[in-house]
Length: 105
Image: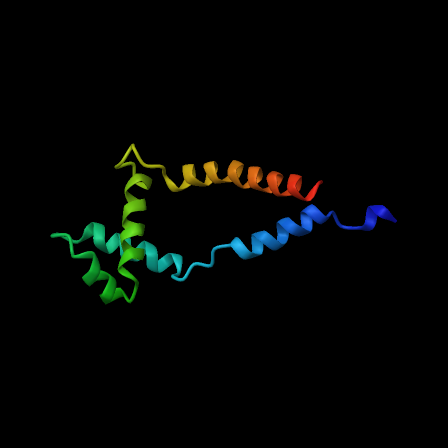
């Protein structure tokens, strides 16, 4: 009957992942449209004004624009979204293993 008991480390991982899961405030379509509007408008609009027009927080828009540049291959010194995800996976696994070691499993 021991096999039917859940592993406590797995339960801990699930609980922590629920707490740290990001819930995006803005839909993906809105983010993509906002970046497209900024990039295609000449002269470049003020980010704050565009954000107000779209009903989003200016810093959110600034971040989306900043991430769109490396994703489009315009900045070699910044990671693309895909590269960031690749780097996050080993970090998450490392954190999970550290938590499991602290619990004693």
